[in-house]
Amino acid sequence: MENQLFEVEKETPVYNYSDPLVWREAHRIMELLRFSPDANGVFTARCAPDNYVLPALKPYFMARFIEMPWAIIDEKRGLCLLRKQGEKPQIIEWKETAREEAETDEWEKLWKHYHKTINNEDRHNPKLQKQLMPQRYWKYLPEIENKE
Image (tube, rainbow, N blue to C red; front, side, top):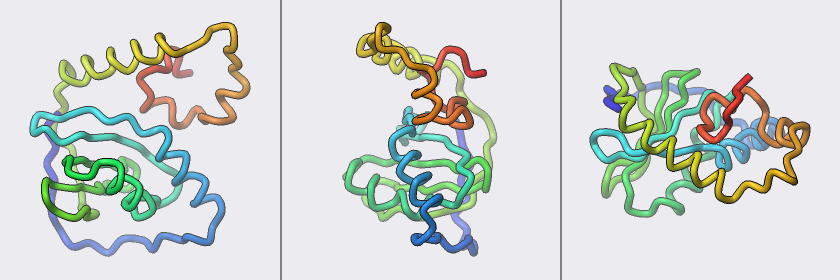
């Protein structure tokens, strides 16, 4: 996956910590992001949240991936929360150039295998699954077979 990241100071919308909908979506995104390494070794996840949640994700992923480079791409806003090796995360403008599908496919296979291994088919509950993981997020979840 090759991304062209532009480090540009950009005014971004203010994150509203007091809005319960924004807070809930930030927590949902934390649970549903799926990372895979790009060609540069940066573990990248994509999302398109309804609300501007990148600032809320920063502390959680700083603690989770202490020394690892990572990026969370908000496709809806064209922004990326990027943490380079040895630096603090920053929100930058993001533009996609091309994606390496072969590398992504290997990570998707791993996610699907993991999900298949831990999944208990006898407890499958599509109604609850849609409640906890709304369909608008399924596009970014490799373990979901039927994305409709």
